[in-house]
Image (cartoon, rainbow, N blue to C red; front, side, top):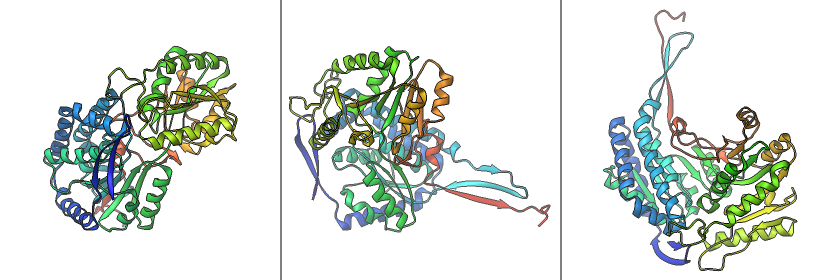
Length: 460
């Protein structure tokens, strides 16, 4: 079986790679475990120097790496460059801060002295998606390498060249053989890997189905797992919001990465008093987006990741219309080569409509009209997902009060759900569990060892 690269802007097959054999998989797991035994004994300074070097190489090769992202999964070239910069920032962030995050935590027990000492746990398996092929890896690999763990990385099968490029960057940066290994294997082999005693934990970003499968295998083998799955983020617009500024952010919130982002705003919940102003201005802004080659810096709307993704999204749109939804804009395939879809707005979506409870992974916005803040909160929470949310209002105090009532892992006020190295990232409900990035990103795959010392003055 081969793992293939297809350019979604042209549907042209570019390259294919042979899947790893059973013996090859055994060899790399063994090597990762051997390397762990020595890497865990290195100093934070040694680990930090490696991550800084990785970040440096990413920035030096930004242009070429960005072109690789765009070629393999269709991201706009400007967004691809920004992804490389963000990934480099994450490696630098942990190189500079992880030692502080992982310093002994002094406890104050009633008797004696005690502390929590952080230590690595071993070989970790990362299963990462195609939509951010460098950033997703950075936020998993960087903190765990600083902890002293080693990494086996199974990347999405449609971005094999990105996965290979990252492993080559680690090698060039001077990483010991086995510290970071790219696995060229299909997703159906993941569960079997988790049965291997040398692998101590796993992190997955992807679909609910993939997450459930990994969590089942991890649980069966009593191993820690972290999941970041789907989202149906609400974008709440109150009647006192600055509509023009809100429209600017609404376009970014929905169209970033052509809408193929877990934390993209997907359900726009608008107060009745500003609904039609928002709708008309949002339509105009989306209609004005320039469709084109994602390699062109002027392009604002590129292709979806694949022909299959386009077909599935068109099917969701068609089924939603049959169930009563109204197409306010778009809804059709764009007549050109590649997997292109018009920027789309759907309205009049009732609870019986299939898209009411689904994630639409692409440039499709769902609009809802509400009369009260309470109705907006109820609608925002009426989903099985709980990844991110955003609230737009001129009254920050009210925004914070609403944020307290939203069931999600992240809430942003007057900004779309976003990501950066020093902010924790993760969700609740069916959006998964665990946190990545910031100090919280160092607390998942680590042994928090209690060390207590009894004193002569203790009463026992």
